[in-house]
Image 1 (tube, rainbow, N blue to C red):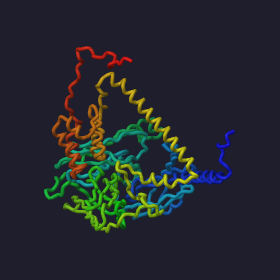
Image 2 (image 1 turned 60 degrees about the horizontal axis):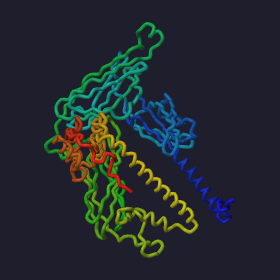
Image 3 (image 1 turned 135 degrees about the vertical axis):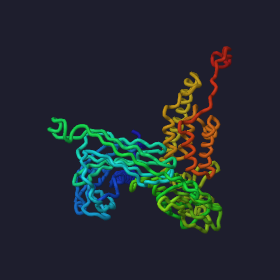
Image 4 (image 1 turned 90 degrees about the horizontal axis):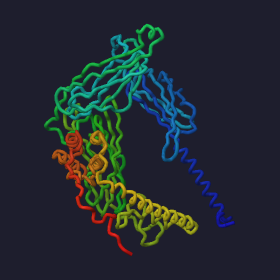
Length: 581
């Protein structure tokens, strides 16, 4: 028996402590994974309407429904439902339970949906605005009818308009199809999920399905929005189905066409053209001090009312003399509030000073057009200034000279650009008791490298057969320009560039190669606009407009001459010169 395979009595307590620590960490991760969140399908309703409260729980042990008792003081509660599903992920399976309940307020005003207990977890409180009841609506005799409206009847060109279609049904629906065609001269895109609630009209109770769209006029003038249509079947009683009448059977409804007066962009409007309801900027976090060579974080938030993330210009800090600025990708949170889009953009910037002294940053400014006031506005952030202090002394913690510092937030790179400070610190901290673990880790790393090299060599060998069969690559997938249009409207500019490179035949290495292979002059100019927007300080809005217009029907490539087979036999029929041994 190999006694070395068992821990000695001296190290058994250490093994037991490690096993206990791993068990505690596993239990803590299970508790951390258990989460609960709550949200409303709408945050503003009218008195007499209902709103759906959704509660999602990922606790594997939660089997009881939420405690709805705190809701009864301010709401009538009905329509409780629940659904459980298993979600497979990289960390294993997760049990997700979704609860839904319909709430009808007992009063108007701002009502807080209280926090609810879900097993051992607790949801957050949610505010709800309840408007007073409107004037009594005339009695409707239709079983189903459709209403549609825009949040702004006379928008500006390229302004994001919230378009809402509501289907009213006095009888339960078994099935149906609700369609809204896009108007000529504007883009129409469905956003979010359908909201469903109840509403009293003229003393009659209707079930309402509310569907939201984003309407963006592309030219000024009169814009006619086609009527929405519905075809479906309702659930009637036994005698209704037997006699072929009443409330059961086929149901049809059609709305009325709507006209919008689209205004052109004013001559004195700031560029890039950005029509909004409101725009606010703020700092989420700013550093208290700057040190040479150390990274500090500035986080900026922009909240735009009346735009999507694709329409917003890129958040960029003004240049700072003596300080390098590294920007992280923008985080966008898009919602649909009061019938129109609203987006919150958040971006983190790392500031790395290169020298001591004074560092001043001008406040970020963003110019936009106030569609309600009809005038130009400028939102700005206050300027910031710091006194850059000397960098952290080398290895101040242990007193050993010559070691590079590795504090939190410090960027330490080798001449090749690889961050090695954290790795060096980890190996320095390893004591003799852990050397066995280090050797095991190094052994596994060596085996992994050998496996990687073998896999790459095998992959290269596998590529020889397809290359020998012909040089023509597979044709691009059909409908690629549809994905490209979606990326241009809502994606990141880097994703647009990657999509253009992938659509080339064969794929292009970069945008310069894409431009060289495009046959259309407008498309080449649009690619130039994209390059300027990404790297040359150009406008992202202008680049998207040029890309949307030039690539509406997909890219047009230059013809590539095909290779003709040589009439001469190959010089080396066997595949290459043979060397005699």
